[in-house]
Length: 253
Length: 320
View 1: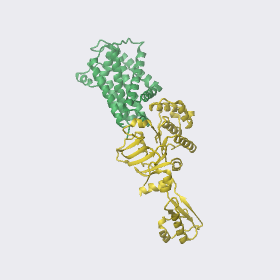
View 2: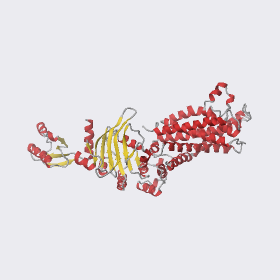
View 3: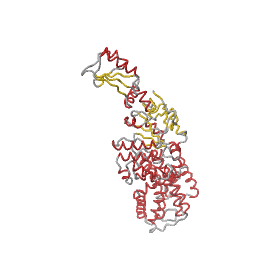
View 4: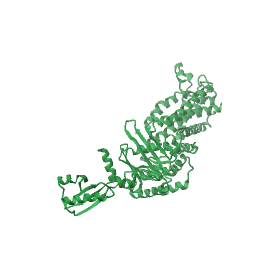
């Protein structure tokens, strides 16, 4: 096993986003804070129907998770697409790293970026909000699994895309709607019954809801049951990435 | 096709066996290619554009998947023992590719790490010095010129001290002086025991540098031997004779000398000799025949095909 190689690739991926930290860390954290300010003043002190929690507090964990998911996706997808456009990906293909080592390095870096962005977002809010932690284990499991899933999807999306345009198609037409419609900004109890059912087929719903449960102790689903769905989805994503990298899907001719 | 694979005394580092590649658009890039690269050799892989050289190299680099065939690298099957083989090969790709986030020094340290090695800063500094990148080692790769980026690719291929270095047109866009120094360095690397496989369109350089050569055209190996043997046995020679200005032989003369494939080149009559090593019978027969028909020439001599002539002749024969 090439542990040093895996560590090097992880460091490369980490170094890459830390070098442009205004773009990769500060900007997403600021965007999430702006969302929060806008909704805070739009919704006032309203309570979330069916939950004993005000809308502002409800929104914070959801936004933190959404930011994590989007950044985990962006880290892997941008790395692969930049690599393909600049033809640098051939150096990864030439390196003596197995497909699983490659995938592990990429996903670990994606998780790290997601955690850093969410931490910055929450730290900035700390002086202004009294945000308690109901169950740290749930936050950790959902945060990490969500970042793995989205990092993996970014890897697959990056492999599929030939250029930045096709990558932005994946990002804007698949990932963004799924995250926005996953219950970040509302409780699915507020939706008509049909859309409530549809929401249960959106894996991001379980990620957001479980993560929120870790902070608030309330949510739309049982977070302990949902762990199985989320962990299964994360495993399936990792295995798919491994297989696709192994065969060089859309990377090798 | 002339075919002499490895010398009898030298072991082969690479044995390509019936390698085929058909791309998804139906283009057959390699058609059952077989060749051997002796260990420690400086091996030239030559061919016109689109011949299949880069496909062969990209298969070795694992960026192209072969359709069939096998490659043995130091006794290891390249496709089933990929990671081991990759760890011992360094490839300079034809296209200049650079990581825009890092400096040359960072890139080289990173390549070492990817190959499972702790970065040897002394060796990295040596490489930067020898490839004339030391002054630019801490600049972002975006700030490097085209020639510098190409040299950085060479450093990347060497930094993990591979047993086989594959150079796919490494000097395209590099100025003459720098090219010469780069080749001097490659000679040193080769002398230290590293096998070098080179593709280039500068045939004079290949002839000067390489001790073995393979010529590939439209996916087929059309010659593979030691450089010396190719130039002695495949390269032809011709006798040139100069008569008075404006002199041209008649049709009957041409027909009479047809066994020597007579042609006029820059006002001189050229007669092809059958052997490059100037076996007397061939030379004398051609000279005597010309003498009988045209009398003594004002001047005469023998010219020998160089690698470029052989390359052009062989690849042209393929087209015919």
